[in-house]
Length: 473
Ligand SMILES: Nc1ncnc2c1ncn2[C@@H]1O[C@H](COP(=O)(O)OP(=O)(O)OP(=O)(O)O)[C@@H](O)[C@H]1O
Image 1: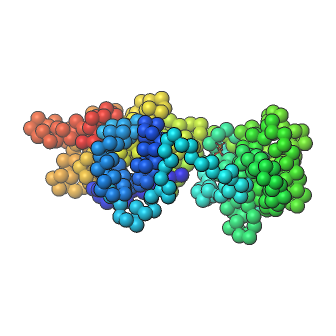
Image 2: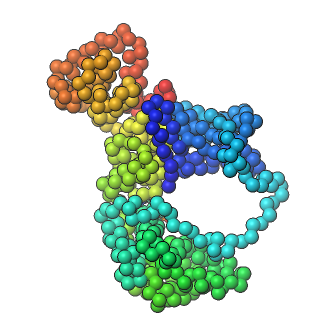
Image 3: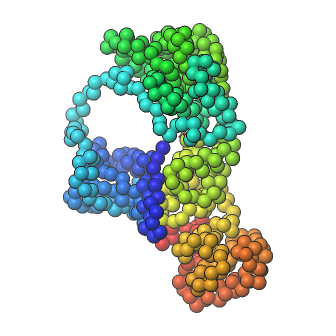
């Protein structure tokens, strides 16, 4: 995954937009222009992040800058709108020459009517996938849904070829099977850098085999797969119905197994449910340990979100993570996508994180949820609006601006939550008569001070998630 790196700066916040969001923007653009246009103009563009609610794109020169402004601004805004930005803004910056050079595509795009020359078919070495650096044991949150699979993976990592061979991990999509397999690979390579680890999807294994047969390179193919210390094969259910691949995999399996080399397989179902799998392979898959991963329960989902946010240095309140975890229940990949969506939404609309903002960001994708406003939500929003830390508002400071922010917070909490005056007082370390005074003070000032009235209205709408027009105020 991803890079949202909020760079510290009190007022002018810069966030690098995640690669996934940028890919979504490009996907939208690509559907709406010709391939030639896309390669000419968009392939070299660099996503520089979000600044003050505006997506900043790096372009090659001032001509390109002008061209983008004239021809593609609206398209980019539409793309951002389709991702949830309420009032999308895009700006263009000319990149310094060195950066520009890195971005230029090496070849001009072919004209549309002339088919591009056929690239040579990839060999099996090119097909090989490397381990994802994020997929380590440290980055894996253990919960009741995956603790057996995790323990088995750890045991295998510590005693490869001895503990359980093969280790067969199954479960629905996006639940961490690949992550665990890679974690074993990382662990092994850290301890024994000389060992050979091969991660391959069943599809790549099949393609490698086809290419090897076609190019008469079966010896290399066999050497490659039979000389590894750890073989990780993803989505083994795709062996179903592929007789030649099953045959070859059977021999690969035997060669490794006999040499006490570790094999880990992942699948969306247990071996017994993989149709048209040869009996001899099925029984081999059952020789070791079969373990499953289930959907994570609420606490594990929150923990995964928290870890993700920390990993990407996103400072996001716990209650927002909790709201996301309640919305997305079954798939961790979707859970991570939802977090990125919320980050994108708040960044593009230049509004601080809150549960209302998160609910809005997710409302297009997931069933909308009633958001109950909490005291902490109000405090945070008021703090952002008045540009001071929440603790200062709750503290004992008597500076005029601080007192006003404190009174506004108490006023809005009283209006938007069910908390009693004593409860609100307690939250601020004061008694209920102070809260009563704050409420009447704000009501009175609102009649006279239009700026304050506008600020309170804006905050109220944000809290209720009715802030469409004001998100960018
Ligand atoms: N327990 C976990 N802790 C932290 N992150 C996790 C956990 N489980 C899964 N993830 C993350 O969820 C995403 C999806 O995981 P992964 O690709 O391993 O799923 P999968 O089960 O292999 O899915 P598929 O069947 O689609 O290949 C990854 O980004 C992974 O890091």
